[in-house]
Image: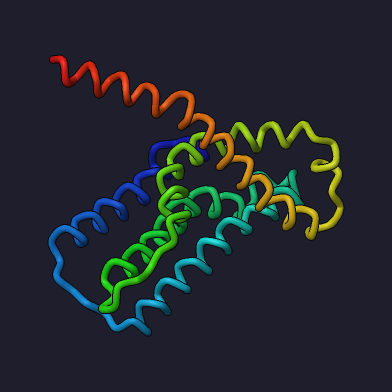
Length: 175
């Protein structure tokens, strides 16, 4: 179920609606409400990320209701969380100062999405990770896994995506 297109339709539709709204909807929301929406979205995103941990704690629970629901809904719920943060920042009546670091991380997110599963599979070969008996170990290792995914995405951007974009841009200008 993880790789089926039907589990990817929800995030696509949420992104489509948000993109349409930001292009066509004139709206301003109070800064306090915007910050509440953004914080709620961030909290939901973190909850969804850590909600996968029971899959590691109970690896034989592949056919449980929890596993089925999580696998079917986590992408859509995560997209809703991220979109609510974007919505809140975009429509806040007061401009939100965003660090340049977030701009760089945002540029890498699609590559991180592509690289996170290979990084997870590499982690599956680390004996310490597989024999972790405490939830705390997994809670600590998950951000490390995210950092490694961003690092892999950054390297991919530097050595593959950006050079190809420059070459294709130069070729397009010649046409």
